[in-house]
Length: 483
Image (cartoon, rainbow, N blue to C red):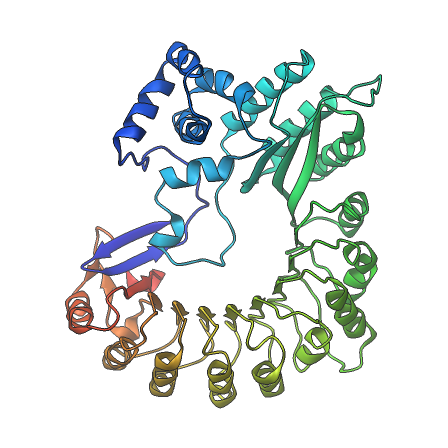
């Protein structure tokens, strides 16, 4: 991610996943400085444990993690005062939040687990468990991070290698909750073995989020069989697997008994719901209805034209997030969205990559119906153009909670963009609006990666004149033709 700020105007490109580094560590108080100093020296950390109030363990451990203070962690982990430790909660305050730089609140998490966390945390926990040292900690929560194939393989090997071959009823164990990203068959085999042997292991794996990509159907089916009925799994992502309708139908018996599932992502497959009374459409509708905790559904880049009501009408609780980008949605689909149970519950809606040029009115009717709840709205590359912006701008001003509007790949001229910005400045809660920098707009990027020309100054002037919404930021996504 490259982000450049010019007088409140930003440019950005998506270029790689984010990996945690220590360049953005913040220490804003005397307490923070003291904690940083204590964890720099393991002997000092050990001495401090005798006098340390339990509420300071979180601060000390957080600085030990971001500072890679392995020896300090060796003393802090066995003395952790609570039954649960969330590593993401420990460290996220020490970094510049990704979502404050580029507003992607519903974007896929891009943080990947640093390797030393697995080695340090797992080794120390195993040391305590093997020696039957008393541990208050029962759950190590790593679910704020993605764990990719190499790290997941290593973790599975730890679990399998420490299997207890003489089971005892009261054996002490620690569960590790994680988000697993699987793209390789060998990782699947190890994970399957680790899950099968978890009952007799000192370390137990709990998968909070399972992300399976580019895997054969038989692999997906086997893994869902292993996980079916386990209450700790909350999110399933099955993108880029070339799944067809019959494949999803065959997997539905395993998915429907995951009673705690809150997020289901079937995007970027080959699901084509062409017939209004298609058997697969009915099965999918029944599946979604039986997932009683479902809050977020992603069906993007599948063909669901005219079938949205059949998929969503049986769901008894309102969805909070719905992604149907690239689904060839129809006017009837938008009319359904304007009147269904989900209208007043949706916080995030993605209609990108659909042809909305002839569907402006039903889209505005939906926005009007959802004006009290919708916070995040994306319509990038939806064939909207300059002559749609006046009506859209007026509607945005009526949105009571809208914070993020994505208009990337919308062909809009410079004068119409300025007019739109002057209008939406009256939207009290709007914090981010995104455009694409393209030739038609007359915007360019110089050799240093910053916006060139008078556009930043004019936008800056508009923002300065804005008295109602002082937090609005304008973003430009860089495209190759900008350079």
